Length: 100
Image (tube, rainbow, N blue to C red; front, side):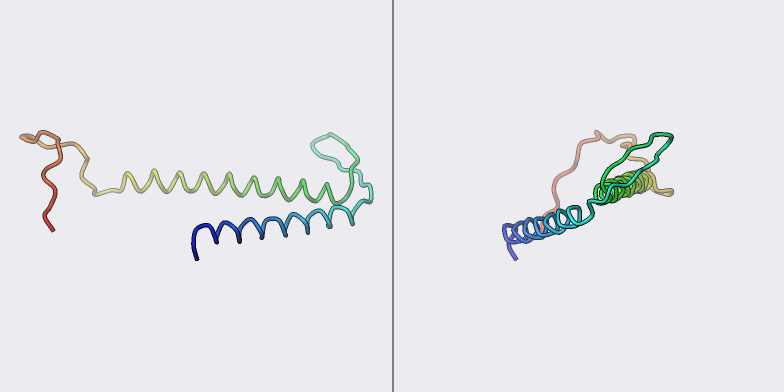
């Protein structure tokens, strides 16, 4: 599949999910009282569940990003790897490219 084809599939899938989400919110219009950290508010059930899902997704994204950064930092500093400092008598410049 081409890159343009993959983008088309992703956009189409996203649009279908958005339509399903709109239907869900419209079908759950009952008003509910929500309490959060001492703040009380009233909004539709569908919107309250949508906000909770987005907040959960943000928490997962933050945790995933923190783990990715941790693994990148760890892979750069593996024990047993020699330091990337040129030794004595070297110029620090790369040598000629290998001939295939």
